[in-house]
Length: 173
Image 1 (cartoon, rainbow, N blue to C red):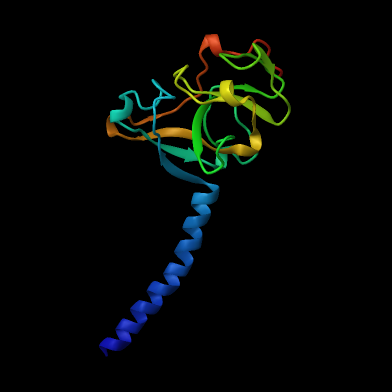
Image 2 (image 1 turned 90 degrees about the vertical axis):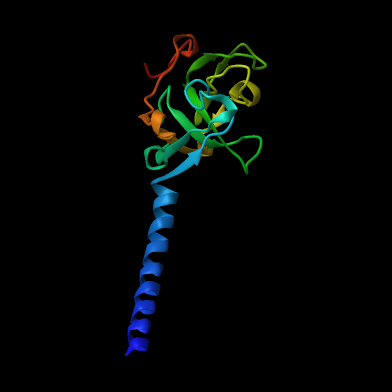
């Protein structure tokens, strides 16, 4: 009798496993995932404690499914210089915008169609569009929507664009 219950348990576990794994993979691939933010490039918005603390953020993949981002969003993207690495930056400009750069090879850049301009909040300590130029929307991975860890920093990440980083000309304003 025990082996019959054992077989039923194993069969139920295996069938549940074969349902749960594809559902979980689909959710992580299409809807959301979490990530630990490393480094100081997004200070003070993320990792305000420096290298001693790392924020853990919720990355919402569903929100960017149609490449719909807005200025001020914090996004995760594939690094244009290292496709095996993901970086997290703030969207400063969208296609058609003219942005004043902070150290790029030209002082002003008009963002081409299908691209965006991203920067870290900690200027001078960020590898961002000022180093590699406009970024293809195709490299967009997710939008950071909440800080999940540490508990004292739990909060929603609302779009914010400092006055000095607003585009000189915004196409859709």
